[in-house]
Image 1 (cartoon, rainbow, N blue to C red):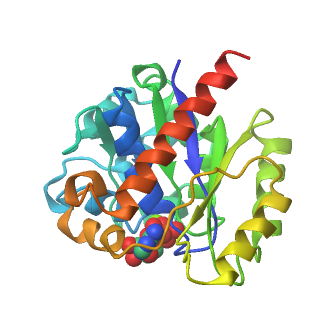
Image 2 (tube, rainbow, N blue to C red):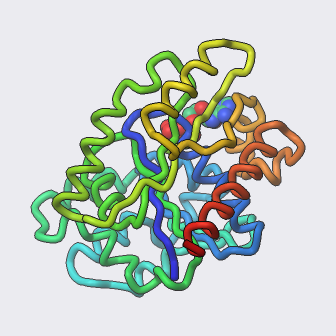
Length: 265
Ligand code: ADP
Ligand code: MG
C-alpha cells in the first residue's frame, strides 16, 4: 500500500524542497519505490533532480487541468519521468502550474483534483512525497487533501515557531472539512548551526510544541546541500561524504524505522 506524504510549511526557505529531494532519494536507495510530486510552480524539486523542464511533454499542469475536467489517469502515467536515482520517479512541475491554480478556482472538485488524479497510481509506489509551494493556496490544499500524512520542515532560526500556529490551523481545517484521517508524520529540524546556542534552544522549543513528533536526526546547515541542486543532483550523488548527506541518510533510516514500528503496532 502506497503512503502519500505532503512536505508542508507555508514559510519559504525552510528546507521543504531540500528535504523532499534528499529524503526521497535515500529512501529510494534503500530499495523502496518512491514518487516525488512537485506541486510548486517554481519547480525547484524538478530542476534539483536535473530534469530539463523544456524537454517535458507533460507536467503537473497537465495533470491538474486534465483531471479537473474528468478523471484522467493516462496523463498522470504519461507525466511521470525517471530520475538519476534508481527507484525514484517524479511528477515534474513548471511555472505554468501557477496558472492552473487560478483555472481550477471554480471547479467543483477544486480541493480534490490531485487526490483523484493519483488514486490509480498510489499502489504502484511504496512512498509518494509531495513538495508543497510556500503558500496556503489551492495547490497546497490539494496536496494536504491527497495526503495520508504531513511532514513539516522547520528552520532552526529565531522565528522558527512563527507561522506554526497558522500551519496547524490549516492542517486542522483540512482535517475537519476534507481529509479527516490526515496525520502528522514528523517534524524535521533543518539548517541547524551547532555553533550557536540559539539553534539548540530553537530545537528544544519546537520539541515542546510538537511533543514526540520531532525527528532525532537534525539536518545541519551544510553548503553542499545548497550546491547540489545547481548540478541537478541529490546530495548522495553530489557529495555523499558531506555532513548534509550523512544527515539525510540517517533521517531516511530513522523515518523507515519509525514506519516499521508503526506497522508492527
Ligand atoms: P523551501 O523548499 O522550503 O523553500 P529549500 O529546501 O528550497 O526550502 O531551501 C531554501 C534554500 O536553503 C535553498 O537555497 C537551499 O539550497 C538552502 N538549504 C536548504 N537546506 C539547507 C541546509 N541544510 N544547509 C544549507 N543550505 C540549505
Ligand atoms: Mg521549495
